[in-house]
Image (cartoon, rainbow, N blue to C red; front, side, top):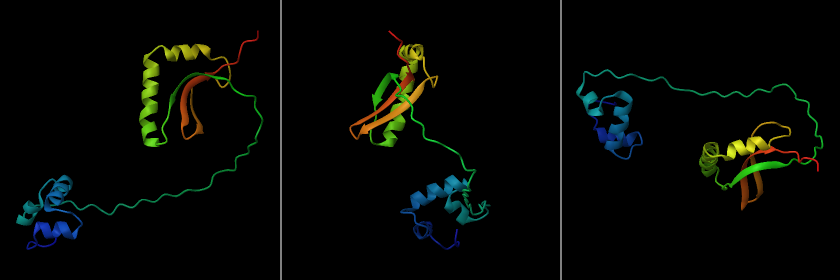
Length: 145
């Protein structure tokens, strides 16, 4: 704290706290002791060095690519509508997977897979703001008749 003569409220306000209660709570969470107990003396506090973050992004190797036409894919599976709000979707999608894995849907979808890429796919499809879907599905090549 600043000086022994300072009031806890004055120190709290100086450092941006709206009340001595919020300052007391924060101080005690960090130091394990109340500001008043420190003011009375005999307490040793730990000082924390300034934390600095440095993010450095460097270039990688050039990656060769090409755009190639591909035939349309047939995806079969189940879907759920998504929201425009990504936070909401971060709740919706895991719940959708959980429900799919607990029921019979997942094994049914797995049996339908006969194309490449192999395996179960999680696919987001945006048609317009009112039509956004998340699919759990597989690639299926129709059998010749």
